[in-house]
Length: 261
Image (tube, helix red, strand yellow):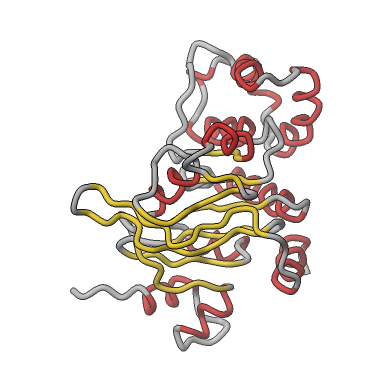
């Protein structure tokens, strides 16, 4: 059994304290209900996947967790800190990687990390010592002294993940973390996320890559039109869809999130 699968099995057997908790969370934009009475949680040591078609409410949920949006109803909190009323404190507890990371392209990767340390009030040497193993695992060392303007999309994604880890947050929010990565880089990121969860981090990620989600997620939340359709482990969702253990997660998703033609 691989270390990633072993750590996932252990997390499924022994529920840990919740790091992120949403209760009755709703968000309206005018007449549009983007998130509808969502209740879910992310526990220490687990990877939770937000899965749904475009417009399902995945990114809106993450922005509510970051305190970038205020809920219309309900509550979302990180380690007991309300994301709406104390968004500054919440941002200290979260590392965030957007789907399309943006950087000052006239800075090198190293200068970008230094800038993040300064903005967060971190001592640079201590931060770099903490990041050193992640730099090695992401194979970023050869890129750090190059200008970000010369980075590929995949290298920018890996730099964004490094920045999300700079302050050692207990919770990571990742929007399509392996989208655009070549297979070797995607594998590096998947392995690192599994290792971070095994070390106690909580990870909430959104993705359309159901094979990737099946590999690393302990639990999944299926959303459609802002509503929770189903949630559970990959095995539980296959069973709920009436499928055997050898069925793909995509088959389970399509059965459970069936839209009329």
